[in-house]
Image (tube, rainbow, N blue to C red; front, side, top):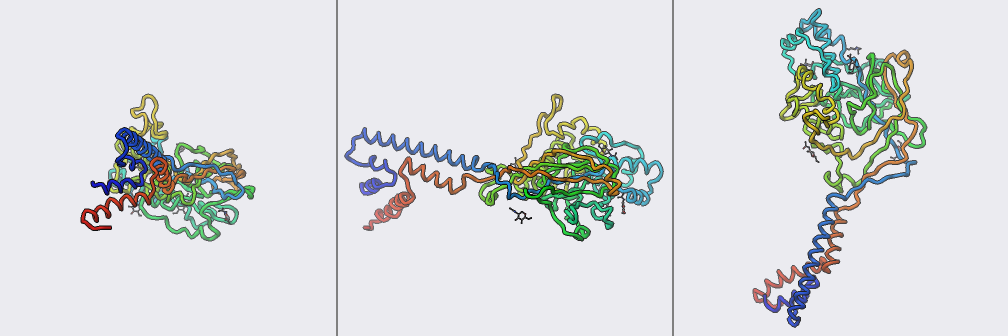
Length: 471
Ligand SMILES: *[C@@H]1O[C@H](CO)[C@@H](O)[C@H](O)[C@H]1NC(C)=O
Ligand SMILES: *[C@@H]1O[C@H](CO)[C@@H](O)[C@H](O)[C@H]1NC(C)=O
Ligand SMILES: *[C@@H]1O[C@H](CO)[C@@H](O)[C@H](O)[C@H]1NC(C)=O
Ligand SMILES: *[C@@H]1O[C@H](CO)[C@@H](O)[C@H](O)[C@H]1NC(C)=O
Ligand SMILES: *[C@@H]1O[C@H](CO)[C@@H](O)[C@H](O)[C@H]1NC(C)=O
């Protein structure tokens, strides 16, 4: 470089550089300026990197909102599982068509009913009969067909044309949408849910959305029941299950039920009084932060293999699928398995032999002292929009069965949340640019115009000079 370009650098935007090239300074002074320059660049980089780190790992937070007068709160969901699963007339028809009679029929029905009613806690109760093995063999019913067979033998009572017998969810003269869902506890009914129609038995088993239910539309139909601070008592009743007993699950309207979090076997209706604290997100939250930054996923951001949507409990179900596949080399029949390489489905014998010894490992996803695996190796992000539901009281509806002719449960919300959590972005990409820019400005006196100047001198001016043009 000639003297000219050196003097150009003397005008440079980075302040210390000019002293390095001034000819009259002593070598000692030059070294001093060089050291200062290096130190400044070093600190500039360190501080900028910490801004980058902040952008990637601490750019969102959860704040607390308290202006509760104006909130609309979605009531918790109710999942009810009938404890008698199969419809006798479907069973009769099936047995007639396939020539199953007498004791064989009774044994086959007992087997199928228990299979339909099975979950991690009661796999050991599935009975084993020689006659049933022969029937399964003869009709070529393999484990992959268990769920479809159970579905075929189950009556979806939410489509019953007679109102009194229909499984429905009501609040006075308003209907609230109910659908049959496939859970880890078999086929159940879900009311008051914010989840899409992908969460339904038909979609899980056949990949088809549920059929249009015209009976629900005979009155005003709500997807979910919403209440606010000024209302005293808001609720709904999910009723019309024709079973001796039911098992109830109360959970967030943004998530699915957890099989180990139930209210147990009840043979009469129950009124629950829950409390709900919602977790909401700022409007721009989804766009302004990536999944890794916000550490949560929205419903449609699934990266799961067996499920097309994401919620935290669904992710844990997938953990269970993977754990079962690892330990027992197959998965229970009540999981959706319509994927590119379907996993082996467990025969009822494997369900009886392999699963009962690991019940707590499967349910809690971490094992006790003598389990072979201490912890399931999976990580489930939270659902971005969620609600924390706790139940304050559960009062039995005495005599409701006589009154309604069926069994059901009700939610009645009397207190409204006074806090809610809001996910927010506090350090956006613009903030990152400003932060790095001002760090560079602080340590080096750097500016964008200065940078342009520098590039200009080093490219256009230099080329012109080399080519011998005079500017
Ligand atoms: C709450 O719900 C009412 C009626 O359902 C609606 O008019 C109102 O706009 C909602 N408020 C908010 C903040 O969403
Ligand atoms: C279904 O399972 C539950 C819980 O294990 C049990 O209490 C109930 O009796 C079973 N239902 C039938 C019809 O066996
Ligand atoms: C069984 O299914 C039939 C429809 O085929 C229905 O009419 C009947 O009510 C169902 N029985 C029960 C107990 O749900
Ligand atoms: C269930 O019913 C459908 C339609 O009636 C039939 O095509 C299918 O083969 C049945 N599945 C089993 C396992 O019986
Ligand atoms: C889904 O993403 C999370 C991290 O966001 C990761 O830990 C997990 O392994 C992913 N799951 C699958 C099935 O790819």
